[in-house]
Image (cartoon, rainbow, N blue to C red; front, side, top):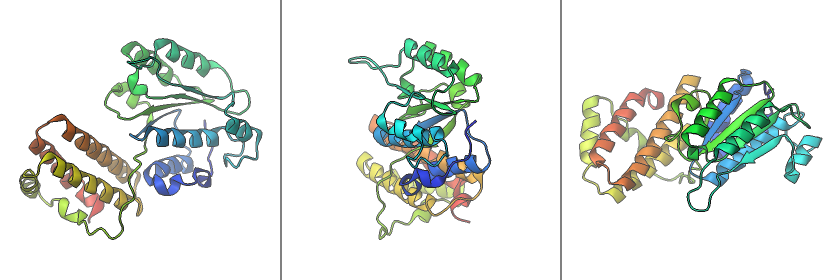
Length: 280
C-alpha cells in the first residue's frame, strides 16, 4: 500500500487540477490509497503528465519526488524498472491487445526492483476489447500490496462498470483559464425548483448547437472556477466531480445531432439537484 506523500510534489497540478489533487490528498490523509486508478480527461498529454508525476511520487523513497533518491534519478532517465506503460497498438484501428494485458498481469506478480512499489500504466484503456477487459478485471479484483495499476481514458463510457467500481477515478479536465472579469452569472443557471428547471430548459432551447456549446463551455469554466475556491465534505467533492463529468458528456453530445431540448432538460435537472452544494 502506498504511504502518505507530500502534496508539494504535485507542483503545478495543485492549482491546475484542484479536484484531482484534493482526491489524492484526502486519500493520503486518511491512508486510503487505492491499488488502482483511472485518470480521465480529453487532454491526453496532460493526463499522462499527471500520471507520471503521481507515479514518480509513489516510487520515490521519501514520497517527495525531489530527485534526491535513486528511484527519482532513474525515473527521470526513463528507465525505471518498476514503472511500465502499455500503449494501444495498430496502424489504423488502434487497440489494447490481449497479449499486452497478459504482460501487465505477469508484471503485476513480480516484485519491485528499485522501489518498494511498482506502477503499471495502461494508456487509453477504453480501447480494450472484451477479453482484455475481463482478464484485467481479475487482476483488479485480486490486488497485491506492492503494485499500483493506473488506467488512462478520455471518457469513462466504454469501460466495464465492474472495472470502474474497482478503481479510484481521478478527473483531469485541463480547463481553459477563466477570465476573472467575466460577469457570467453562474447562480442564475441553478434552478430552485423543477418548474424553474423546465423554464430554463425551454428558454435556452431556442439557441442553435453552436450557441449552446458556447453556453455549456461557459458553464463548465464557471463551475471549474467555483470548484477551485475550496471543498467541503468528501461526498460534496464526489458530486462536483460527477457534475463536471456529466457536463463534459453534454458538451460532446451536441456534436452528435442529439435532441438538444432533451440535453437541456437533463442538464437543468442535474443543476437543480446539486444546487445546495454550490449555493446555500
